[in-house]
Length: 257
Image (tube, rainbow, N blue to C red; front, side):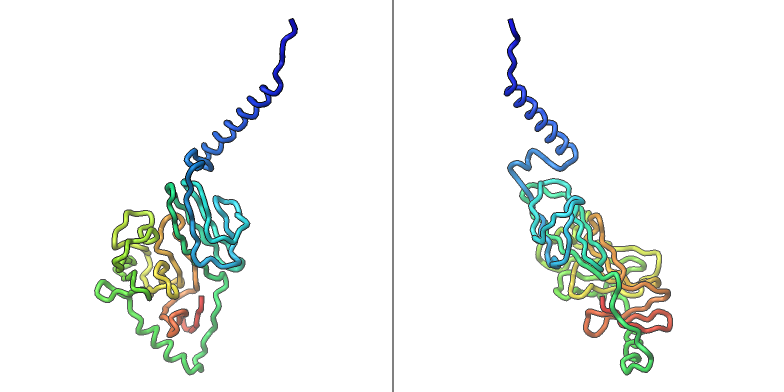
């Protein structure tokens, strides 16, 4: 008797096996989880510039949408802008969780100019630098919106949450949510500390080698970007609160990041 064949059934079984194998591989790499079929999480990018390129899990999204629907899993977000330092954050999201990320961008070539001694404002700028003092536990420096306070103890920079509102995830960072956190420790003496523009989540500090911006959120990566690097830096906040007076050796500059 001639054996019967079932081509349609064979194709169905083959396709089914390929589907199962494919899903298993995606699951093993963390790209897919079975809960993804019925749930999702959201990453919101606040203040996203129109020229920013978004890379989700190392793949460009080709979208300018500030809200990304993702699976409840581990994800990385990389933001890139022409002429600016990149910004990156990795985080793990639970089912139905929404995480709001507020990136910051500093130009790779900081704008500013050298202030000659003949400038009528040069003397006042040097005086402001000479009289800049570091905040301590008794003279904490508050952010513009009053939610965060900074102070320096030795070579350590601390921050405290001042608001009665719930402590946000960016302040908790990779730690348990405590109202006071150690933000940064350096082997070099700290010469200046403040906030970047009107932000409460990004600090600016100076040591001998330069002026730097550092976000409080220390979940990988804790973004660290240079504003100005030199040889012997002293700094003061400019009167407009957006720029910085910088004395590098005998040279005086006004820097606007």
